[in-house]
Image (cartoon, rainbow, N blue to C red):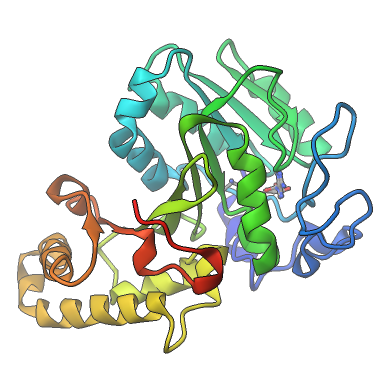
Length: 316
Ligand SMILES: C[S@@+](CC[C@H](N)C(=O)[O-])C[C@H]1O[C@@H](n2cnc3c(N)ncnc32)[C@H](O)[C@@H]1O
């Protein structure tokens, strides 16, 4: 596990210094123009022996950091995992320590005991460091957005967390397409960002056609001042869009307005206030799921409601 001190120093992709600087390709340049990585930014088609698609970035991670997204995966996509003939879940970019991948398997096993997890990391040193943690249903290998599964294997779900935030915005659709090409037809890619301790997170649920279906906002409600505090954890496809005139900005503004409206409920706890916000927002926004998710400090929305024009809209 990476220590708390390290994580606080390095975790925010936009403010930290870290390993990336020692690397030949700074995170800010994305992957365009990198030898062996063609346009639009995530590399060539997968060939045996070819370089993984992507670049090594900061490896910051933390124990329990991804609990919220794992809870969503096992809850909202529990039926998908239970129904798969041979469920395989992939973690892309697990970081300097495989702790969140080990936790992912542990959580998934509560849904399906025979589930397998493969962690791919583009940094060979991090692959070597993870090897001692491998087990009968958990393995680690070098790989990038091409997700080099054995021939004939498809992933039921792929989790790529705190990976794309360190790339250029225009590299995002191609990265989604490369990962989604390795999904089973009904599979899901979960791509998102969170803070160093996993208290605030925003992620997208993306279908095998590489089109997002949902965006989920999740927070530890104690200590949340305003829902728009989640803006700094928006995934790469949205982080630059939180400006007036863009849908995601309109949504976060409406969320704050609902939060203010329900301020009196704060006396009953932040959870009641969040649930009331979800109900209010559902009148004008395509809010998904329901009370059982809202109670956990989650709120999912159809992607169309916030999609920037360039990324396209398809609904759910
Ligand atoms: C900030 S860490 C995230 C670790 C963990 N997923 C988490 O959320 O705590 C990002 C990791 O993704 C890796 N990475 C970046 N691009 C990648 C790619 N295209 N394929 C696989 N790993 C990648 C980096 O090397 C780094 O170790």
